Amino acid sequence: MITVTVNGQRHDIDADPNMPLLWAIRDILGLTGTKYGCGAAQCGACTVHLNGESIRSCCTKLSRAAGQQIVTIEGLSANNNHPLQLAWNEMNVPQCGYCQSGQLMSAAVLLRENPNPTDQDIDDAMSGNICRCGTYQRIRAAIHRAAELAKEGAKS
Amino acid sequence: MVTSIIALSFKTEPAKKKNNTATVVKDSIGSVRAFMSVYKVLMSPRCMNCHPAGDQPLQGDDNHIHTMNVKRGVDGHGVYSMRCSNCHQAENDPGVHLPPGNPKWGLPPANMRMVFQGRTPRQLAIQLLDPKQNGGRTKAQLIDHMTNDGLVGWAWHPGEGRTLPPMTRAAFAAKVRLWIAKGAYVPSAKAK
Ligand code: FES
Ligand code: FES
Image (tube, rainbow over all chains, first blue to last red; front, side, top):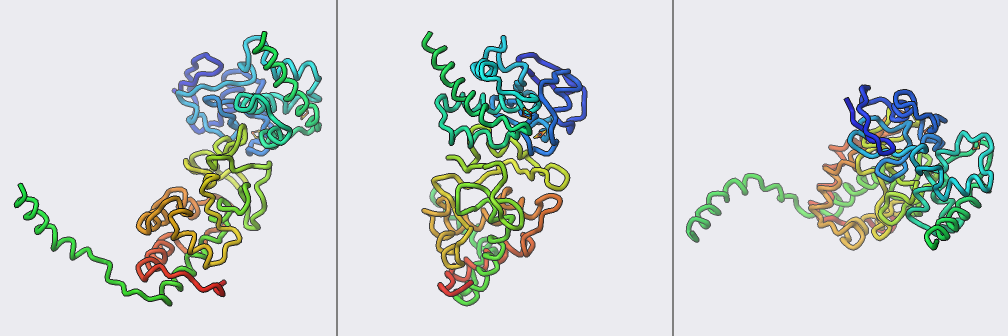
């Protein structure tokens, strides 16, 4: 039995410790917002947070998450109101949407560590998240917008 | 008290003598020859790819820049949502083209870059011996690092589809020891 906290909730998972964390999240816990793209740490669609750091859950064993805090796209904010989610909505970022939960989870780490990122910072943080629809321009613009929203939120 | 310490030190003396391996005579030719073997290993892709000249790790036997625009970062472990351990686990993921892994996976930090790529044998030998450029290591610590460090050792267990350095780790460790024991001589500027 492996105990993992996902989005603040404790789960005892009865599964092979070598199971990819992504499998446990999607198939056992039923949280299907996190996507399977490549299964080889090449695309970023499966990005979740482990103790606040982005990890690729397709190549991370369930055992690495034992006793740790996992946050998935479903837990990024309580009411879908993380500045990134608001900006994403405002700027219609997604095309097909498949890569977007991974994009948001990666962008969230960037904004936490750097509330005022330049284009270069955004490229450095986001180049591992591939978007087959090519929404990169909107992603970059929406990260800048989210940085603004976060500042406005902090003021009000 | 004093006598007991003296007695103790006398008692340990013969044992120390037996272990004494520092009988190698200084020999500039032998020392440099040993270093040239060490150099070949350090320039192999499994070692050099994480000791790049720039601030991006390298991949593959052709030493191409790591895909995904991966950066060194201040601590050598990447930046933001592009940290090494986001993909690289504590061990190799099984299968070709899957991320290799080690608990310490990363580059040298930005303030101690320990570049191998592009260094001549002479430049690399000087750099390895200089505590200001080698992470503050004495010669003994340098030997220990090359012989016992787990991340260095990964090069000999690199996972499926990756070529090995040109000699075993034991042979490599022996060459490192020989290089230092024979005087830690540095190759001439002409050595390649
Ligand atoms: S599915 Fe994990 S990186 Fe592509
Ligand atoms: S929106 Fe379709 S893959 Fe990114």
